[in-house]
Image 1 (tube, rainbow, N blue to C red):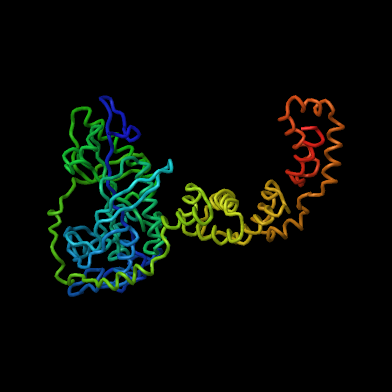
Image 2: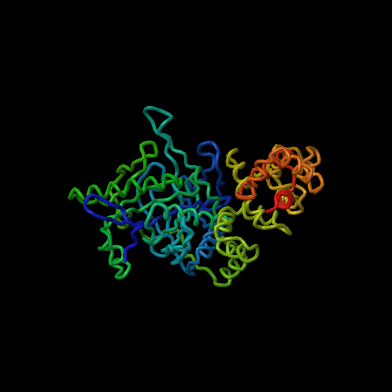
Length: 497
């Protein structure tokens, strides 16, 4: 049965979007895949290029073992099969930023085989995306066209940089699912330390394959495995932000539906997303694998791994996002939503745990995901650049738990702490923000307000919710420092509720 939430309406009826993604993740490594040249962002043009990267005659590639280890780690994190034997192939094509005239990749025998990733949707439900493969390949260089009106420049700093291409099954059905999937892959790789996930620098980007079919046909495809039930796909290349991924899919799906409803057909092609215009445009007709004339690279032996080495890598894996989410729920009593927000960034999860030791975990979670996150976002900072020590959040929560300050006063304290005035305890002392728990002082304020407002006091008997006005007046009279629970108890006693 077709899920109506995944349908898109056209003029002539309902359609379904079907997507598979190819995520290109730059391997976190100090050297390139087949040379000792440095990898880094910000170097001058062609300053990180070896003779191998530049394609000089007679130069032979030497496989970087660390890059292989990073690929194996990533495969294990994706719950995928690690192939003990894999092979590098030459993908032949001519382009000015590819000095050898071919890219070393893995077509027939990738290092990582099938796996599955569990992804959380916006509504809190989960869906699985099948991983078809992960293979290693080298990146090409970069062409620069805007430095001269008559010439193009070639920067080979990226040439030879190790990439992991993660290819999904056509299991993704909406733009929101596509974004959630890329976020999940990015989070896993960052947790593993195999890719820094920096999309602005192009260290993680996605090719999005989009097709549309009539409502109900996707279900038939899943039942039979027959791709004829699906439409012709178009590939949108190198999309490097979550927002652009969503926009590109929405535009491309609508474009294909309009063509089909007008009686046309979809041409399989590679397209680019124009972020300024919010549209995709044709780049080239889609080549088939044989057009690249793949063949095993004669300079590289087949890659043979030992199971003992893979087991050793597996034993050293860090706690992954799914495991951390489940632990946060069981150990700290957090909801699925709160745990999901915290584990979405490794630095945020670590910060929470450091602050939550011995404290009310739910209260710590609220401060981390709301106040701290909001301040960082306002200053365009990540949690890894958080200037506020986790110990300050822990101390702030402790002051609330021990009734030294109220939750309302805590926000004022937080403002002072964020502005660098010291720890929460120091700020409370400096600004005299301790909560008033002296019932005598609170009772005096209550008596004065009741005496000044006898008509309102009389009305409370018929309308108990009117006590809220008195609570507000008492808090105002005490500068917001009165213990709210004590205020309520005394008011109820005095007003006969």
